[in-house]
Image (cartoon, rainbow, N blue to C red):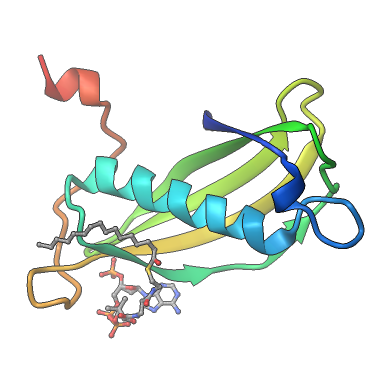
Length: 128
Ligand SMILES: CCCCCCCCCCCCCCCC(=O)SCCNC(=O)CCNC(=O)[C@H](O)C(C)(C)COP(=O)(O)OP(=O)(O)OC[C@H]1O[C@@H](n2cnc3c(N)ncnc32)[C@H](O)[C@@H]1OP(=O)(O)O
């Protein structure tokens, strides 16, 4: 699991209970999954197709630094399946997990298109 992105929980991210609004966290996760997919599949034309159960484990509060982790757990024909974990940056306390996020690679016609990828790639290797 690669924890690439850190977020600082600010007043505008809070729900009326004073903890991180779940919808805000899901927005951050969707963006992270989209960026991960664009980099892996080398195509900007992708969409989120499916998310499995979302387990909100612990609620962050204002001022917390959290980090978002994504890993690829499967490559299909047009899809890539990801797993997501969010945790507190400093304590590593678990905040959320999503076991399955399916992202789909689209062609210019907006329909699913084969991406031709079978494993995780690293940009540094592509640049060699
Ligand atoms: C030149 C252009 C420049 C563009 C410049 C872009 C700028 C940078 C843009 C960044 C973009 C960011 C995006 C952010 C994230 C969003 O906000 S995306 C918005 C929310 N998502 C949507 O609106 C998607 C709406 N859904 C759809 O359009 C259609 O369902 C889809 C995704 C085209 C798929 O259609 P479909 O008929 O289900 O296609 P189908 O061939 O049956 O399945 C496709 C794949 O999905 C899998 N699948 C289908 N249903 C399921 C399911 N229920 N569960 C699991 N897997 C499933 C299939 O198994 C298949 O996988 P493979 O076997 O091919 O690997």
